[in-house]
Image 1: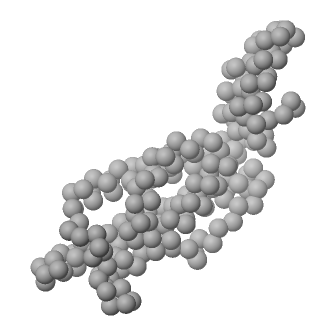
Image 2: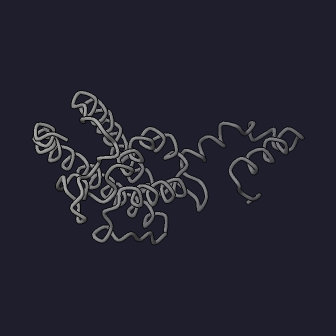
Image 3: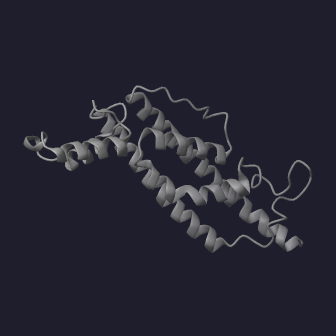
Length: 194
């Protein structure tokens, strides 16, 4: 790369480093919120927030645990999935953009080629920030919801509400339709008769 290209790298690398670090901190904050939800539900979720800087690992942990805690995370996580995986593929641990030259005295991202498109970077990061803000709002909402105590070991308040809407009126529970609805609900939510 020419000295002109290296000069451009000197300008864009700190911007990319700060963007990447922001994402790492936002994901770690989301994990702290998951830990709160887990405690409310009687669980003991643990993650070494200080010891991990690998965005890919942080994201995998978050997705797995959030989906187990509440199925409603699946949609929110899907909006973030590809962008975070892409970032983890370029700079998983924050070393690529920390400085343009790695420990082996080799320039980072030489195999990628080309320059970083600032407009595209801005647009993608803006969209990611909006989605991370949605995630933050959603986890806060769930914390407040679970603090109300209206959940079971396997069901959130939203699940209970959905089930209640599917059930026929109480007076009709003795007929055959109730048994069919009950079977479908048990199958869908993975719950027993009690």
